[in-house]
Length: 146
Image 1: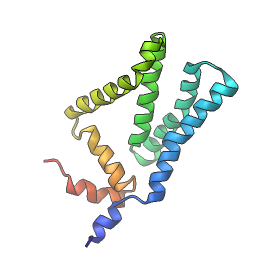
Image 2: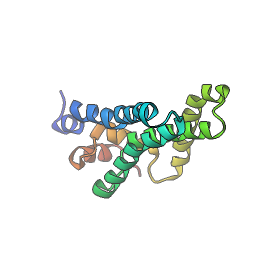
Image 3: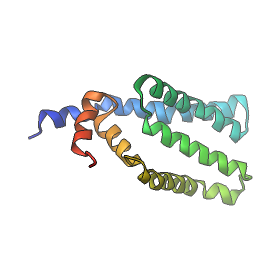
């Protein structure tokens, strides 16, 4: 049997789907449309694809006082693609760009260990409690760091 606190702490399915649409589908559509209609340059398409997650992150920070972790992951992925393109975009480099993202993400998780709360705490809070204070509070109380 679940307690009321556990039931209210889980984000609604609609919120999860909305996050996927905002952080994955819209940047992908922006990338594809810009490649097709604006410029065949992959770099320009990546810059255009970053506008939505970057704008969403700035909006979340200004209005909610926090940043959506999914937006950060999307921006990190796009940034590593940009770095791969900056170094020439050779076929060999393009083959390892997913590994570049994984390495950059792992490095940022490792570096975040020196912060008061590691980066994965915010991912856990986001996926378990959502961005609403009423649902994020129970998660923070359960994983309080001494």
